[in-house]
Image (cartoon, rainbow, N blue to C red; front, top):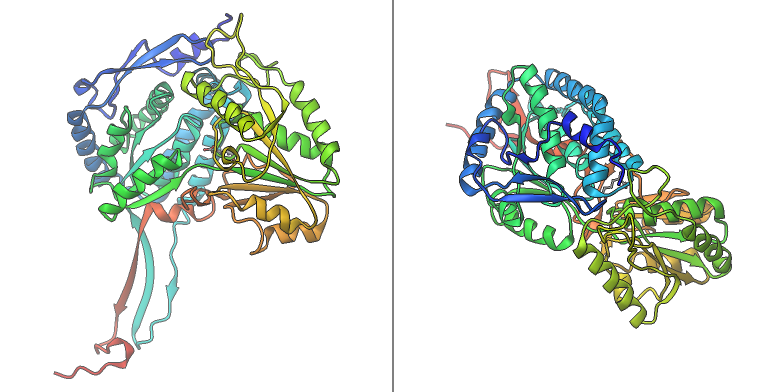
Length: 513
Ligand code: UN1
């Protein structure tokens, strides 16, 4: 197998065969067991990372808490300047980090680069934001009084991220949290620990160059048990977690039990509604990229196509043809469209989903299956599949993190398609393909899509960082990234100042003494 420069990339990112797990200047205390990172690209061990023990965690939290005392006093625009430098380093290391993302996680190199670009974009956004962390002023009802609100740094932000966006989701959180004056403790997925080490190394360099404590960015490694150290920790006012709905429900309960805040970005079951007025060419690109991009492992991946019966045959013919042309293989080879899925468990889930949906009555339009032979030794390469279904099928109601596209029809008005679309438990992303203004506006109206993201003539995936990202219902309700998502990373304070020589009470209450 060609190397595609991966050794060079690992060197650039400071990754060795064994990596200290617990970062933030307490490296020497790491004593946990080793987590092995296997590449789904070739099935080989890339490197090992030490996991975080309870004792390591205690030291990390001490370091983070100490760093917060320094960082919160640095003026916000100066914090923005540090984030700007971080973005510069990301630009320098974009190819290396994009390659590691592709090699450790399996998405195409193009998409690996895209992920690093998302990191850079959110940093740029955060730099501007660092001069705009403003509250409102309001008129007091009392004479000689002034009232306003301000946003203060919150403290330690705990970040739990998933394997599918092993670097970008961390950056969405951390870039905003840093300009807000918070420090971050990050537990990346145990399936992509090296991406975590690489990002930590880049951040550590920037903080060192600015004589700032590395504890502003902390990394811990391990499974759900390590995550639980954070969710139950009263010193962490905000937990931002990305992953399955099942994981989110546990995190939400543990954080709520101590009345902490949580920001949840969980599963999606995203649909594209294809109306009689749809542009077929755009529909095909949107649907196929949505279904097979990141090998169907985005929260925003297109899982369902809801097609009007009048154009069903035409759309299906085009989508099936496009799907059969996809090249599956080593994601570092830019000739390929689709790389492997993450691991053997994911392959099992994919195979079972296809079997189950057929048992329910699904008709296979594009055959799936695990690919074997030369170049596919990892056993993680699967064929994107298309299955014709009924909307109420059990498998169609749930999210399978794999390249499986369910297609179904609707009849009559767009309302009928919306009913199908909204009939699932998840509420992340949604799209309509139409050139009909009435249908598009219906889709966007209060009676339309119930998702956090609703697109017209764009697929369900590939959101820009400028908008708030997240969804409703079982997706968890959190919003990350752009717009005013920063507010959750700060604590709001209302201030009333009396500059008169009297002490009038609010609501006109008289209290004479
Ligand atoms: C995710 O899958 O967790 O919209 C995030 C998109 C990307 C982010 C996906 N910008 O597909």
